[in-house]
Every structure is written in structure tokens, then in C-alpha cells.
Length: 484
Image 1 (cartoon, rainbow, N blue to C red):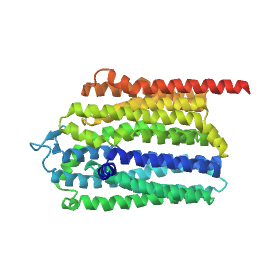
Image 2: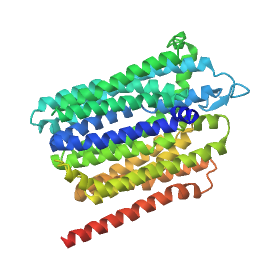
Image 3: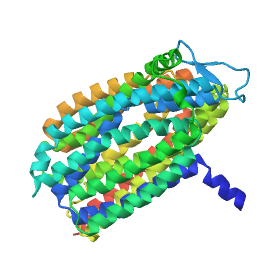
Image 4: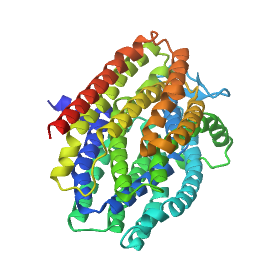
């Protein structure tokens, strides 16, 4: 028993799942209370602030996964070469990790993340003052909204700095350690949010409560970092090894990061755009659905994301078949982790919100179905982009540009007649027309994925289950309405 408990305690996958399960459980507790405690205008402003922070964190620009992969390669006994791939430095990957490369990676990451934090803060400030002005003006006490905005903006450098430290710690294999701490902070954050809402707290108190625990999380990361990287101070910003390391990280990071910014930025911006012309109730309903969907998307990435360091190490050791076997298993778990909760929410959410006296209704079944279909197709393409990134041959920037162009064109064309439905339809069109097929093509060119069977056997059952379930739900709702 002790052996199994210790294994579970140190399992990256299990601890990641636990952390995300707590996040989901926290949402189950806090979202209903928030919807029953705050007006639709306050709900809309709160989730717009959350969206603003999500956009700011996108300006990590791909450095976090790149640094995690580079650190994992260093542990495996590899180093960066001029072509930005990894080349064997030692005769065996089981030998001691390259201390020089690890030290250079730490100093490079510190230098990079200071700049990212400044840029992200500037961008978030400009977007917040421009795009949140109209929603905040609709609040009964607008100054509450501006205080919450200021607190959220102050959290941007904190979130960016923590992202850099976590990237290094995950690269050296401390995923489980980070996730255990995250679980504790999540419980504390859920408890404080619950107390604030139950006591009738305003938006600024809600923002302070949330960002306080982000600051504590950064302090945690700093303390763990100093323990596991005690000699990072040996290098300076101008040491040749640091300059060389940074120069080799940048080509992979900017490509992956540009894809993330264009792709995820387009998705996140939909709420900010809709807030400029939608009704308060309509915007609140859409933002709540977006937050639930983002939670499902984040949770469903856990099986694959938590295995990235292991997959990167297997690739460094040239264990391609072992890597693909593990990736296939993780992909199946990832798709079902999204599909099943999504169907449950489609069935239960309207009744739950009605029973708790929510002041904000849930989106209609058609809108929820379109949003879910787009998100599941997104997960397919995203899985292949993550798999391809293990080879350090990054094509996310092309996939992101292609998606953003198609999405923008479709949004402009469809929004004239379809209003808010234009957003999910444009997302589906952008995935089907470019992002997903392009990602699959590049991944199959790089790895022996057994033709179409890799995707059909993993993704196919999930999309079929989702479509059949949504059709059945629509028919039940239709006939229930006729019977009334």
C-alpha cells in the first residue's frame, strides 16, 4: 500500500489530474455562487478580466514549452546545435546532465521572462483600458470595476514570472511537486472565493482574493527553484554560453509562440469583441460558457501535457515507437476527458442554473453544441502540434496564421446575419479549413503514425459520440417544447 501511495504521490499524470480536478471542482462550487450573487453585468466584467489575463499570458510567446523541452533534453544528455535540433553530446543519455547547459538555460530564461513580463503588462494595460471601458461603465459602481482591473493588471508580471520558473522545474522532472503545491493553492483560492462571494464581496475583493494566491504561488516557485538550481548564479547575461543558448532557443520559441498568440488570441478575443455590442445578459451567458469550455479544454490536456517531459526524453533517446505508443494513449484519454464532461454539461447546466436562481442563463443548446464541436476539433490539431514540437520542428506559427486568416474572414462574413453564432462557426471553419488538416499533415510527415488509423481510432469515437448525443438532446428539447 505504501508503495502505491508513494507512486501516486510522485506521479506527474495523477497529480496533474488531481490539480485539474480540483480546478474543475472549484468551478462547480464557485460559478453557481458567482452567478447567483452577481448581476449579469458584474459577471460579464469579471470574466472579461479573466479573459484579459489569459490573453496576457499568451505573450509567454512559446518560451515555456520550449524551455521545458530544452531542459528535458539537457537532463537526457543532449545539447542544442546550430540547426536548432538536439544532438548527442555524451555517449549515453544516462550520464550526468549537462550542468553548463542547465545553468545557461536558467540565466537565459530569467532574461527572457523579464522582457516578456514588461511587454505583457503593456499590452494588457492598453487592451484593458480600451476594451473594458464600455462594460465597466455599465456597472452600478464603475470604480469597483477599475480597481479590479488595476489588481488584475498588477498580477500580469506575477503570472509571467511564475510561468518561467515552472517551465524550468517541469523540465527537470518536478511536475508532480509543482502540481501538489498547485492543488493546495487551488483549495485555498476556492475557499477564499467562496467566502468573498458569500459575504457579498464586490469585484475588487474578488480580484484581490484571486490574485493573492497567484502571488503566493510565485513565492512557492522561487523557493523550489532555489533548492533545485542552487548554482544558477554562476553565469551572467553576457557569458558566451548564455548568449549562444538564448540564440538557439529563440527560433523554436517564436514560431511556437506566434502560433499560440494568433490562434489562442483569436479565440480569447471573441468575448472582448462581443462585449462591445452584445447585451449585458448575452455577454454574461457567452462568457460563462467560454469559461466552462476553457476549463474543459485545459482539463482535457492533462493526459498529454503532463507527459511532455517524458515524451521529450524518449525522443532524445531515439525511442520513437515508445514515444508514439505513449502519445496515442495520452491522446485517447485527452479526447474523452473533454467529450464526456461536455455532454454532461449540455444535459445538466440549464436545469442546475435554474435551480440555484442564477441571474445569468446558460447559452442555448445549439450554441453550446457548436462551441464544443469546435473545441474538440481544436484538440485534435493541438495534439498533433504538441507531438510535432517534440522534434523541435515547429510549424505552429503557420498553423496559427492560417487559422487566424480563415477565422477572421468567416467572422466578418457571418457576423452580419448570425450575430454571436458567427464566433463558433468561424472557429469550426478555421479548424476544418486549415489548422487541423495542416497539423495532421506535418505530424505525419515527421512520425510514422500508421496513416489515418492513429486519428480515427483515437478521435473518431469521441466526435461520433458528441454529435449523436447533441442530436438526441436537441430532439428531446424540441419534443419537450411541443408537449408544453
